[in-house]
Length: 91
Image 1 (cartoon, rainbow, N blue to C red):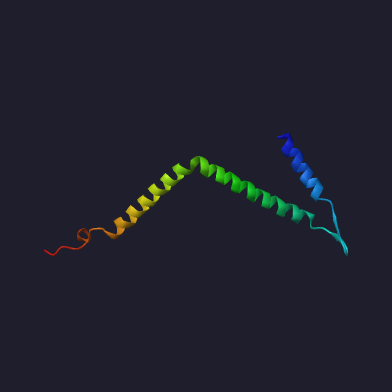
Image 2: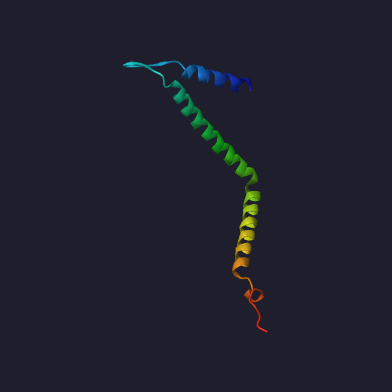
């Protein structure tokens, strides 16, 4: 935990120094930090997602198959209703 706090402090302190352009100071350091942080968060999210799928992949696939089967049965039930119960009978 201490190492991650130190690295995050170093990351923000190191990249927040003003960058000097040819015509003056460029004040894009916050946008640059946000872009780098976004890329790193995306990378961590992908790696965590892959780890989650490796641990729970079979369960997710089984639950998805059951859900699709239930949806398919529901849709087929609407199309294959017996229409005789809805038609009026003549006396």
